[in-house]
Image (cartoon, rainbow, N blue to C red; front, top):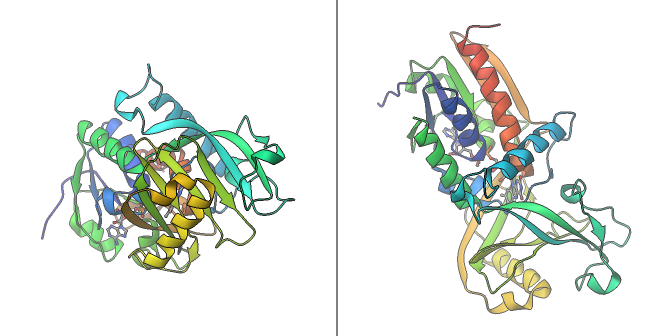
Length: 335
Ligand SMILES: Cc1cc2nc3c(=O)[nH]c(=O)nc-3n(C[C@H](O)[C@H](O)[C@H](O)COP(=O)(O)OP(=O)(O)OC[C@H]3O[C@@H](n4cnc5c(N)ncnc54)[C@H](O)[C@@H]3O)c2cc1C
């Protein structure tokens, strides 16, 4: 039986757990991250990813968390201010958001883009009835999670994988010295807490060699099963996708992968011959609203930070800062 020595135990090594752990470690707290799966096998690594709220319980907190995150991503990837290691990982890109319907409003994720403009009829991609051009922040998740893990380590943080926890009281036994446990377990929270409000929305993507695409594409329709996207990240391009509510399957479905490549090749013909490098599946932790709050359990404070649905990357820094603040208040013994 391993025993981890730290003031704070963060459960979960996805974008939410790692961002929260970075905030705490950089505040000078001793932190250990424990997770059933390492960063490279989480839902977070499967994300496209583009900044913009989508498939998340919208409430008054979302805008602020999303904007805090956007500012942080902009600062981190600024060529002079930020971390050079994020070059090509967090970047601003132009692209198209298209809809099968002619009367559809701009998709939710794009609505807050500062330069959103309707496409001229000749620019609307084949099979779509309306489209907008916009600039957005995109994130190559494998590299980004590697950056977060490295930054956490440099701040003195420790990690323990694999460590699957059956219950929150088991978590206390894993790290007996921890006075605060931060629960960033995504879909795992459904059984761990337990919290039946958490439901997986399965997403499958294909990673292919980039045949030279520089602009992203997101195509949606009223049918949530009809989702097509192309996110170029340097040498690779992430092709999606699916949104399958209640589906826990973690293995990639070959027929779905074929359908994804065909739908993306209809937009970008060069993708028809592109070499497939990898398949990824993630379970978006959907919930009626993000759970970010502290609760007392015996001598331990549990700070919950889960249920970010299709917006975990978009909300990551905003939620991490708030969760870290709740943990720091608990450590200081304040009410
Ligand atoms: C295909 C796809 C595309 C997406 N695109 C975007 C996008 O463009 N923009 C955006 O903002 N978001 C996007 N998302 C959503 C985003 O990926 C999620 O909201 C985010 O990854 C959730 O992060 P998380 O850290 O909460 O969960 P996860 O990444 O799932 O991490 C959970 C962690 O908890 C651990 N864990 C779980 N249960 C236990 C347990 N019992 N004991 C120990 N450890 C446990 C896991 O092992 C893991 O380390 C997308 C998701 C998918 C699948």
